[in-house]
Length: 329
Ligand SMILES: Cc1ncc(C[n+]2csc(CCOP(=O)(O)OP(=O)(O)O)c2C)c(N)n1
Ligand SMILES: [Mg+2]
Image 1 (spheres, helix red, strand yellow):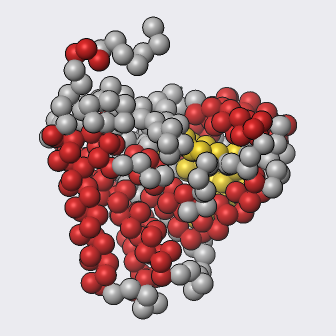
Image 2 (image 1 turned 135 degrees about the vertical axis):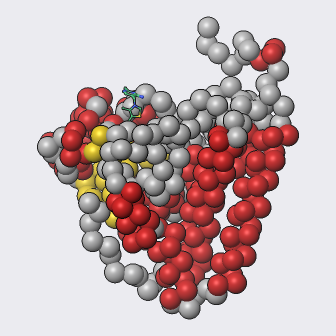
């Protein structure tokens, strides 16, 4: 269960709150559109939506500076948008078009941006965690103060390679923030059914890594925890673990039996904990923004997302001559 919500902070500026609102809304609307395009047969293969978890990546991206790196699992569209990758390029990739980030040959789980320091998109559960430590190792070796955000799920937290990585990351004081996105389920298996040690961040202590659980539905709590973690990394104090207590509203992927949790449980999270509604309430409640202002943002986001779908549809499929390009063997 998510820990108790932090009291609403009054010291957050209007600009910051509007920025979080906008970024989270972009992810949500983009994912809804991707779901629609999938239903229309325009997206093939795997597609894992991030709806419900938006506050995690938006809160942490608010702590990042140019040069910082990030990588995550297959549930990756939100991370791409939050680090500034172009919605058109992401949507075109989802639909297998040449205008996509991987020229239409990678799809949902395999996009990268060197420019934005986004290192995937990984379909093998937990595989991105050692890669994240490797990126952090490179920055330490180069002597800069960049930080890597390595995101993974509660299910991935049971993978052995995560613990080998913890050991090395702490041993070498690597500037990596391990972000466990604990959305309470790994496909259809709840955390409680897969482990007796359900305080996932606490496992880092065995390796000397400090961590904490954070209300991942509260973008301000995420940002506050992220600031501390990033500052420690930049100061050369080594890695830390943030266990973000969050929730995915949609199925694991586009096919999901939905039999492992009740409809009431999902509805309760949506109505009581929604991250976007939370920021909306803060903005309206504190008189920092008007309904009209928020409506204008909603409209703007809708236009960006619709334009990305149009861009994707208009972009040609990769040429046959591309079949053997960009591959290792
Ligand atoms: C090594 C490996 N084992 C199993 C799978 C199949 N699989 C794909 S996603 C997934 C669940 C992972 O859940 P979690 O880490 O909680 O991430 P979430 O989907 O909740 O974001 C599994 C078992 C896989 N892709 N790779
Ligand atoms: Mg999970």
